[in-house]
Length: 264
Image (cartoon, rainbow, N blue to C red; front, side):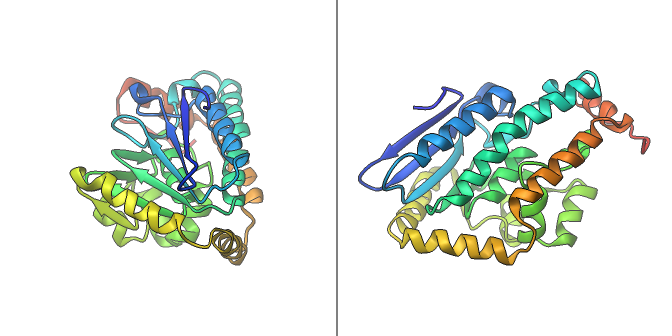
């Protein structure tokens, strides 16, 4: 088992590995300990033999409500250190997940925002509960998507819809997310586990090595290498932590008020 902040379970008969973000009191908002536990969990799964499918989900009422903004408060140096520490764990975890053969399914209940949206988009397939919500959220604190979010938004949705989510702060319902190509299946609350298990069963019985090769081909066809893009995101996010708007965005978020951005 990984750290209790991220739990893992593996069924040797089916080859299904489940990874659960387990910080429900904070809607699974990602901070440094959770990020490090995520990397540890992915490394643990990578060591297993016979993995045919990986499921990402969140404990409690949310998949992941973005980053823990309270950890980004303070000076730009303090914010930058927190961002670097999170991405030093999350970025390698993403690359490790994308480098495995087993398809990744994101099972989304509640909200997938910020880093939660990014990790949802990094999955191969997404199933959502009918009341799930999807939003970029970074615009609210004067930052840019990280954890592969801008890479996946451009590749899965296109530049126009990516801009709509970021610039207009759109929140998508599960139905809208499916229409946009972000979600593959929607399930009512009482049917969520059954529908998820059907999707898992279909994927876990497939040609796993061919699925892995297919993902690598798709990623290569998309142009910009994910590893390079993850670092470009990091650089852009760190630049934003030195802006007045970022300081205002974090302050407003923590005070639960509307940010008054000045474009500085």
